[in-house]
Image 1 (tube, each protein chain N blue to C red):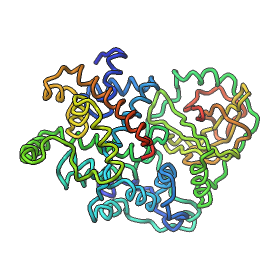
Image 2: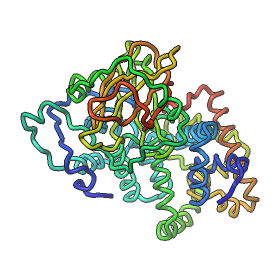
Image 3: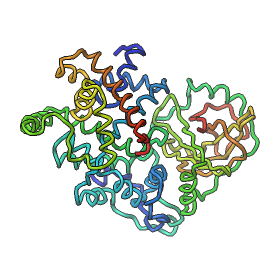
Amino acid sequence: MSMDPTEMDELLGAYALDAVSDDERRAIDEYLLANPRARAEVQEHREVATMLAWSGMDAPDGLWDRIAGSINGPTVEPTSELGQVLAMRPSKRTSWTRTIGSWAVATAAAATIAIVAVKVSGDDESTPAAVDQHVQIVDNPRSVQAELTSSADSNLKVRAFIDPDGNGFLTAGSLPDLDPSRTYQLWGQLEGGSDLISLGVLGAAPKSPDFTVKGKVVLLAITEEVKGGVVSSSNPVVVAGTPA
Amino acid sequence: MGTPAENRDPDAVSLRTYDVRDDFSSASDASLVVAIGRYKQAALAEAYRRHAGSVYGLAKRLLLDHAQSEEIVQEVFLRLWNEPDRFDPDRGSLRSFLLAQTHGRAVDALRSNMARRRREDRDAFMAADAGYDLDREVWDMTLATQVRTALGDLQEGERAAIEMAYFGGLTYREVAQQLGEAEGTVKSRIRIGLKRLRNNLQADGVTLGDH
């Protein structure tokens, strides 16, 4: 379906109300990927729709029990080894694309990545204390967030949360597991700096790794590297994003 | 909807022993979703407590069918459990996210021939005493009154187009057909009406995006 931007814009209200055809919806989905202004407009329309749907109605009795019953699959008792960690989300088996051609940062950043410090992420990312710390970071109104995305694969989406003291963590469950000989590595560009510095080696199957950073980060990026990490990299960026 | 076994990765292990924060009553929606991502059932229960009524209310309003509406509530919350990463707090509130999912599913169901026939039969039955208007039974909160007022302040054509599209599950083309208007007119009315509605609500002191 071919529509010009004006026609697309005219349909944003109907799109937000699910009142377009399937072809139109697909065309607008693509349009939104490249148009933050249109995305913001759809979000605004959906907020209004949320108000229309406001209801003081209660959900029917017994419905929660059915939902709870559905999510309570067979419970595996923790072994002493498993007892060290919390269950984490399994990785989604998304297709793996190493080349992210349209990420401007990929080519620019790859040439300038330089090491300042490499910190291997601790194994404590899954402990109850870490979970609690993550909740605190998310709840802190002064924390910043960044969505690290790939324009080549919309399923790849990593979110970073960083509190004012520079304690951060990622929700990286959408990254596909790597071969054990490989690792993901997190890089950040600090305000006023021109290079990307390593913020941590994340492992081959990171879920919610912690990291720390000194200073204000203006760009975060993740690359795939050899196990153990590298001091500088020219590999393509897997996902990248700017803290808001 | 999948069975419990299908809804959960077989490798996933539920270790509720380590729930370090079971009281989520004061947690933000964003932190609820982070906790849901860690299999905190209590966090999902809190999300359900906050939003299930609205989710059910919207589904019921579109489908006029209790059983189908319950199915949709179940689907929406199980999807939140299985794919919490889909919620992006930068793109709106959790309620807005859940209601958008609900609306999409309800519209899909409504657009299936069988559901549509059922609805048309019921509409014909209800038209005698209700006519085409907002269902009053769910508007039992102050906020709902404000929304109703703001909706009433729209031009009639805008209000009808929005209601028929959102609560009727019709495409803008179908709305145009039913109203005997040009398609372009209807899609403009929906868009402009939503913007006007937003302005009206904000002028009335309603903060959007928090609900």
